[in-house]
Image (cartoon, rainbow, N blue to C red; front, side):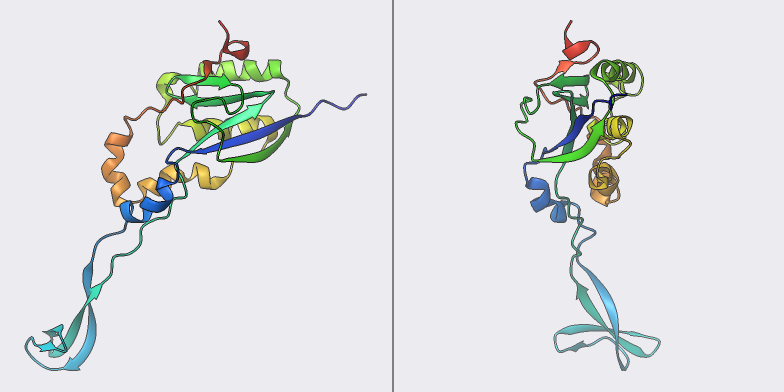
Amino acid sequence: MEPPNLYPVKLYVYDLSKGLARRLSPIMLGEGGCGERAGTGQEGSGTAGRGGQAWVTTQGKAQRMEKRPRREGKQLEGIWHTSIVVHKDEFFFGSGGISSCPPGRTLLGPPDSVVDVGSTEVTEEIFLEYLSSLGESLFRSEAYNIFENNCNTFSNEVAQFLTGRKIPSYITDLPSEILSTPFGQALRPFLDSIAIQPPGGSPVGRPNGQS
């Protein structure tokens, strides 16, 4: 019996921010501004200035009010868009549904990094049938949501179908990282309305997205 053919599976990773997330995220996703904290000082009464610092008296004990510096916010390395490359094509999900193109041929250009997910025995014919079923269920165009059902959700689903492996958690955890901050929560109503569809692909539903 001949061994089955194995087809390589790659994850293409793009930083949609082009490096801006790495530089700006500690500022934009900060955890609060400057504040004050009390440190126990000497016994005394009243409020006085000692050495340029403010003191308050609580139950006969003087406490020094110190400036608390702003805490650094979360560090995001990128705003990730991913796709799966298998059977000589690149497949991705966006607001237009599932699309395909030759590897690296969307207007995003070449990927910032490539992850070797593994190999698969799934043939191209079976894979395209699988994508068609996804396009009619979990990954319809109207099902797209930037936080809950996005390109990375699709890549993770497809990677597990093909190889049994998930994509890196630093990619799939990105939405929760953003939404765990006050800034992310405040912007969520706006961000929920954003639809991302990298131009340059053809709709998947028939081989090679042809009509």
